[in-house]
Length: 125
Ligand SMILES: CC(C)(COP(=O)(O)OP(=O)(O)OC[C@H]1O[C@@H](n2cnc3c(N)ncnc32)[C@H](O)[C@@H]1OP(=O)(O)O)[C@@H](O)C(=O)NCCC(=O)NCCS
Image 1 (cartoon, rainbow, N blue to C red):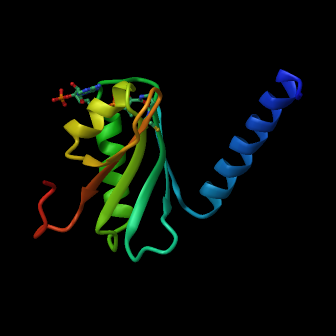
Image 2 (cartoon, rainbow, N blue to C red; image 1 turned 30 degrees about the vertical axis):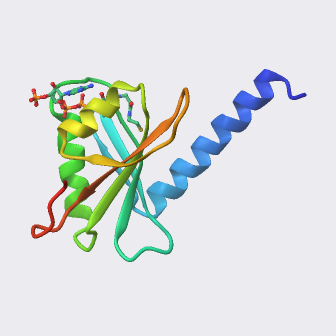
């Protein structure tokens, strides 16, 4: 059984190391009061995953502009996906941003995978 402090330290180290790696690979978009961390999904030609998007001053358009920066940063991408807890408020936000459900895990605490197509000819329905 791990001590809770050790688990917390492991998680902190993991987040720090992963965030540094994301920044080194230009997969971290940072603006005042917000950041978006993304990755290219291995094994796919042009799918980008939003690993995390966090805004500290909500409802001021910062999340929307982070998405716009992402779309600019990955001009080759045709699809963006994001996994969100089903009961998270971010779930409604992604829907508002034009994302639609790709899959939904059943059960409490389930995750929804949202996807948005970026090509003009394809619809999001
Ligand atoms: C989700 C999050 C990134 C949104 O960023 P934001 O800067 O607050 O969003 P914006 O200001 O760009 O968007 C605001 C718009 O979305 C709408 N909106 C915000 N939350 C919403 C929700 N839960 N459901 C529906 N619409 C929502 C607002 O009404 C507003 O609409 P308007 O432009 O028509 O007025 C932010 O709230 C956040 O950091 N949440 C905590 C972290 C998180 O859950 N991240 C996602 C998982 S990694």
